[in-house]
Length: 78
Image (cartoon, rainbow, N blue to C red; front, side, top):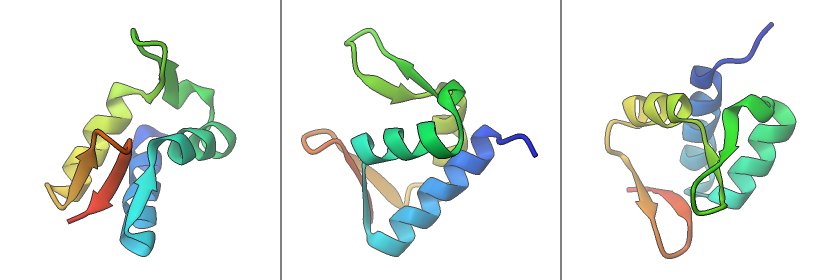
């Protein structure tokens, strides 16, 4: 069965609900190995990032209950 951006977003929300936080570095590594390289790209700053469709599905799923901490590159349950 082919993985989708929605699958990635659902995993992220569940991971954050369970652990409280999710570091971007850990998320990128997990997504690459468990969902596929197609959900990750290198942005203009040269950093690995999640595809826009994943971020869009993620935002829709958490509905503002998860916040991004720019300093630690971590998502956290609020």
